[in-house]
Length: 328
Image (cartoon, rainbow, N blue to C red):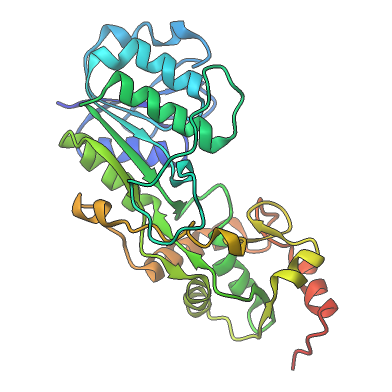
C-alpha cells in the first residue's frame, strides 16, 4: 500500500488531495493543528508546524509521497529537514504568483521568478513561495514535483472570488449586474482537476516544474458563460477602470471588489501557456461544468450571504445608479 503524508490535508486544496489519495487506496496521514478534521479514511497527526518536534514521529517512518502546500517558508524548510530523507517523492504546491513579470503574454515555466525571500524574512506571498520552491529543489533535486496552479476555483472555494460572478448573476435574476469593461483575461484550474494532477504526479514520481492552468479566456466570455449557467436575463452594465476606481471598487479580490478584474498593466497574468501541464497529463474540465458545480455550492451557502470577495448587492446597485445608467 502507498504511504502518503499530506502536510495539511484539512484545508480546501490539501483536503481534496488527501481525499483523492484515499479514494485511490493509499494509506494517508494528514498533519494539522486539530481544528479541522482530516478527510474520511485519512489519519490525522496533530502538530504545530512552528514546533520542529511535531515531525518526530513522522520522521520514524518511510513515505512514498509527501505533499506540502504551505506558503510559510519556515514550515517548508522544517519539514524538509526532517522528512526529505524519508520519502521516495515530494510534491510542493506553489503558485504562478512566483513569476517576476505579469506584463508578458504567453510565458511558460522558463520565465524568471521573483527573488526568493531570505530565511527568516517576513516576505509577501510570491517571494515566500519562491523561497519554498528553492528549498525543495535544494533538498530533493531529483525527487520533487513543483506544481504552480493558476487561480484555483470550484466547489467549496473559501476565497469567494470565482463564485462571485455566477452567484451574483443568479441573485440578480432580471436585474442589472455591474461588470468591468475592457479586454481582460481569466485563467483558472478546477480544484478537482488540480487534485487529480497532484496525485497522478506523486503516484508516478513525476519530477519538474509545471504551471497547472486551464485555457486563457477573455473575462467577458467567462462572465457570459456564468450568465447562461445562472439564467440571468437582466442588463449587463460595463464600467471603465476609471469609473470603477472612482467608486472605490478594488481589483481582483477582497471586500468591495470585482473579482478576477486585474489592472491593464498585468496583461500577462492570466495568459500562461500551460503546454507542459497538458503534456504531463493535466486535464481541465469545461468551464460551464465548473460554473454549474459552483452555482449549486453557492446556492447551498446562500446567494445573498456576506462574501469575502465582491460587491454587496446594495453597493453594486448604488454604483450603477451613480454611473447614470438607465435600466429599462
